[in-house]
Image (spheres, rainbow, N blue to C red):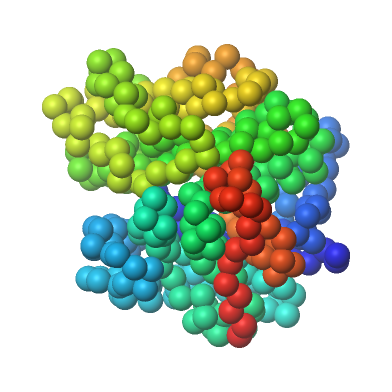
Length: 377
């Protein structure tokens, strides 16, 4: 198969903005360049389109309105408005990336459009990502693969995490051998465990940034705890963390996934702002540590990506808890900020090649499953 350019798009549960990334791949191998010290260089150009306060408020309302959804096509409340906005904003983000890099729609084979998850109930075979793939394809004049989670959920999988097959391809391209963990800390945190033979085990570890972000928005009117500075001033309520870790989710055998709303910041409502931030941050870190209960072999290296890498308090907690090398993806030449967007470009290429996106050991689907719906311009 021929290497082709693809663009991936990601708007995560943290509701901060849209990540855009371009890669070259044939759906199996990934084209990379290496720096003088043999690190993997950037896979391709990236861009970011942040959400304004008003746009973030619209998406927050959409998350609330989606609680009444009972079918994938339901669009109660402000969901139609939010979906139209998301589609338009993603189009603008792709157009900006193309313009900044002297590219045209003809240079891109496909766009991987994740959309915005507003409901994820795999136990009910229901997952909803808003965003109009057909409208995006028409505007961009580029084929778009959307609805990347739906097929897996329909086949009995968890629909998440979707990125493990990309993590393995990236590790192979970099020459890294297992046991290795690739940890993404977004609103929800997920891990890919790669064993010495290249076998995959992947699952959501638990809450990531979402409870802390919600806590900071309510208490301070800011969207996140910058650098983990508020948590650094606080004291962890160890009893509350221990109680939270008794949730049945942490005992469940993976693959497994959860919804952003499963663990509410309001459980820390009796604490001061700093103590609440510290406690919710510690909860995320301990949940990640608990993922080792399911590892066949303890990873010797954890490569960490996502917004959580910017939280110095969280990263320090992980360094203390995991007893392994903790590496910011950026320090390897990977992209902590754009790893998921790159993954959705890769998954879109796999989708149009008819290759599986998910596996029994990553989502619990009964057999390796394809995914995505292709929309032509």
